[in-house]
Image (cartoon, rainbow, N blue to C red):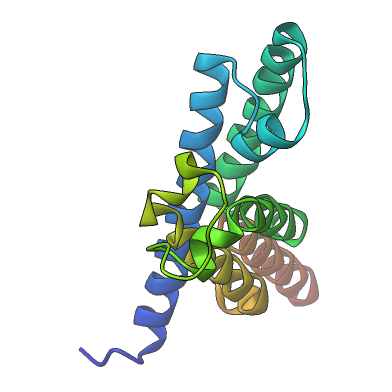
Length: 165
């Protein structure tokens, strides 16, 4: 099997879409279950416990919805940029862990984030979101593409039958 085949490209886009979408689903579920504000918002906004919990529930539910829509491939024209914004905001909130993941050059930054190089992949996730936006027309296995191509073929069949009569 050739890795550059059309089927392999479609499978790769499906894998990117599903994994980046599930990252949002899992992060959103974590916010809903724990009732915590997302990491970047919780660090930068000084909220009361009630407001933090309310923000955690609402942002978590939104992340679950956006992630689920991304996974199944519906409304990608809107969902993929929103997903990229969410993942981009996450990457920006841990920028120092991306620029210097092992703390060799930057000092004086929050040790909670900085002691972990596991935040570096947020830049990779954001890049994957940008690729999904750029290659959206080639993602032929997304639900919205399958539905639109099915409805188009149905219209052609009806038109052909009408022309035969």
